[in-house]
Each structure stands twice: as structure tokens, then as C-alpha cells.
Image (cartoon, rainbow, N blue to C red; front, top):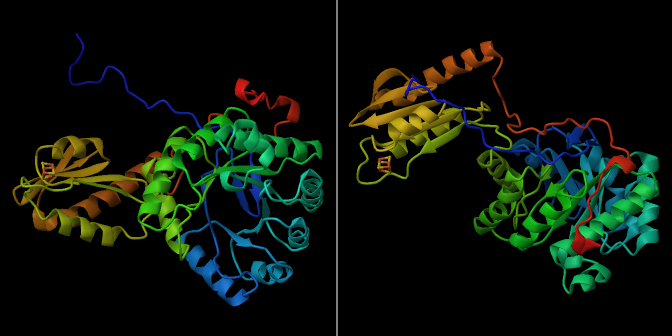
Length: 404
Ligand code: SF4
């Protein structure tokens, strides 16, 4: 006889991360099984070195792991070494229109260059940039944007649709590969959510270079954060994405928290405890808002990958508390604390936060002893670790019929 209290099978979400090569950007490795890297872009003119460095320092403090600066003029290129010498994260140069700016930027100790193939001035100029990047050992993002797609690709499909964007990226990848260059990261951005999702999905079936993901020109927060989440969650849940940028109007510092929240909510990279709280309603039996506010304050800066649930009454409280690593199912002015699904103590409302903090410390110690403790770790990994670049002939690209 089976025991009805014991599960007959442990369910696991089906998931596979898009297998990508590793590309080294300064001291940060993008792709493979590495955590999805959070990046941003500065807003002052790059040649205003003090303002640019000050903003990068604020981004670093917020957790930014790669930073991009625009290089539209020679004076911006001249500022790159000075900026690089004063920051602690890898520096990326963003180039549009003028391939000479790309060549100039590559004379400085930068860590990556971003090229928009749609406006760099043709294949020959692109090749010149690739050759110099290869000589210098600098990786490159081939950053396709729907808004600046080459006419050739847009006309093939009638408008800058996802297959046209992927065609463009693949064409430039092939040119780079023909130069023996493989330090490539690819982005396929649009301000349209559906276009972003479809473009990355099509790309991921055809190539294994890591992807930089984002919804471009998302606008002003908070709508821009919601829009970015709508565009990025489907592809993140498909296992696509190796570095992420959330494009928000204004100061870029809030982009970092938004990116980490999207990664956390999709389970792709957890770097703080996940608090599960109900919205409250007329059944509420504790001051939940006060408890959550206090918990948030006491957990600030904590990087433990733990799920903590606090629900305001017995409707879903015990169920959620059992599912979480740690949780409280509240009754009138009191509650039951669960740890890994088991009741560990009864507490009064006034002691709930202290009890959770104490149990969390015990949980952390127990997980450390088991060797299963996670801090800011990727929670979902590719099943193959591509630490060796895949030879061109082995990339096994599948050309979709519509792309032939
Ligand atoms: S858990 Fe209880 S208090 Fe919270 S929203 Fe649901 S029914 Fe209302």
C-alpha cells in the first residue's frame, strides 16, 4: 500500500538553458553556465570624464557588472583610458555610424565593443573593426536593432521583423567567423515586446553565441520596467539570455535593481531572499504590512537564496508556508512557523520577525553543512558547460525554412 502522505514522484519544471559559448569580457565571463550578467549604460557625454566616472561608481555600488559608454566623437574615444583606469567593472564602448570611432576605441584598454551592423557603413568597414578587435583580443557585441535594420534585410520580409533581424545577425556572425573571430555576443532588440521575444527565440535555434537581452527604448518607469519584464520573462524562461540590460529613461542606476528583480522573479539568478506576502484582504489577522516592512529592512543586503512566506490568514498561509523554505501561517495575533514544510514553532505576532530571522540563521547553517547553500547563484544551469569554443563546422546551425 502506498503511503498517501508521501509523494509518489517529485515534480521538476522542465527547463533547459540555451547552450552558449563563453565569451570573456574583462574579468567577467558571459555565456555557458555563468550567471546572467547585469549591465547598464552611462548618460553623460563620455568625454565628461568626472560625470561619467561618478555615474559608473554609482552603478557599481548598485551591483552593475558591466558598463557601456557611447563613443560618437574622437574626444570620447580619447577619454576611454582615463575612465577605464578609474572604474572596477569591465568597460564596453558603444559605436554607431562611424567605424573610425570603433577603430579609435580599440586603441584603448576597453573590454568589449558594441557594433550596430545596421549603421556601421557596410561589410568592408565591419571587417576592418573585426580584424582590429581580433588583433587586440577584444570581444564584440553584434547589436541588431529593429529600428536601424539594414534595408536589405527589412525589404526581404517587408519590414524589420524578427526573422529579418536574425538574418542580419547571422550574416555579420558569418563575416566575423570568416575572419577567424569568435568572441561574439549577439543582441536583437526592439521596443516591441513581441518582436523581442520572437527574435531571440528564432536566434537561439540557430546559433550558440551568448545573447545580450533587453527591450530597447522601454521608456519611463514604472511602465518601462513592466514592459521589459513582459519582453524578457518569456525568453528567460525559455533559457535564453546571458547578459541583461533594462533600458530606463533617466538615471541608469534603477536599471540594476530592475534587472536583478526580473532575474529573481524568473528564477534565473537569485541574489536576495524572496519574500512571499499576500495582498491582504478582509480576512487579515495580523499587521502584515508592518511585518513585511520590518523583514525587508532587516534583510537588506542579504544575498541568501531563500524563499520566505508570510501570509495573513489561514486560507493559503499553511500551504504557502509549507512550500517556502521558511514561512509563517498567521492566525489571530499569532502564527505557526514552518521550515522546509515542517512546523518548528508557534509565535505571537510581536515576535514573528525575530522568529523568522532566528530560523533563517539556523536554516543557513544547516544548508551550509549540507553544502547546498546558495548566494546570488544562477538557479538554472545549461546541461553542458561550453568552456571550449565550438569550432565553426560544429555549430550545427539550423536554417529555418523562412530564412533560406
Ligand atoms: S492570505 Fe488571507 S488575508 Fe491574505 S489575501 Fe489571502 S485570504 Fe486575505
